[in-house]
Image (cartoon, rainbow, N blue to C red):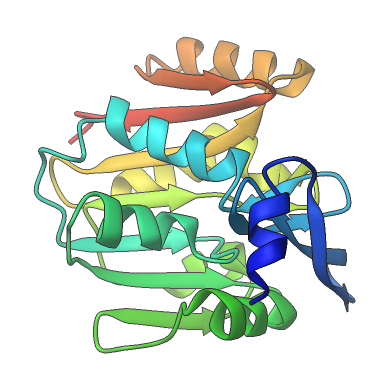
Length: 215
């Protein structure tokens, strides 16, 4: 790492490297405000705005004070959620991360020290297809299924949420990251019609839905 890049990134973002992915398109490693972040063409994937959004949602959900033993992390990115849980909230749960893009997994490993270990299982797979086969239960589900700035359409169905609720252990937490748009307004209406209670952590264009107390 060049120290000048880290220093000058407080003034302007500085590109470190660029990658091409068949799934995610152009991916850029950039120094921003002294920190290396991962961006797609139109969105931050880890360690910038998205990192703040996920951390804010976890704080609002009370996870800092709650026991977390098993996590299903749908959408690894460069590992913001893993970093928040382990390094910022000082928790050591078992985490299973599902990521569809092998290039992103390689970037997370090489540049962000997000590796497999006995407490972190990384699986290369389509998260929706993986859920159809998943038999284990978790007490925290983090759903961040984006390709660039497009959220996976399946995520915005109540049936997807009900599937997680059915799988979860009692007193679990489900976090679903989405965007403020017409689809999200329709999703809110469907949740209300289904009698499902939720909180939202909102920041700029992001909305993270927080579901608790459903068991």
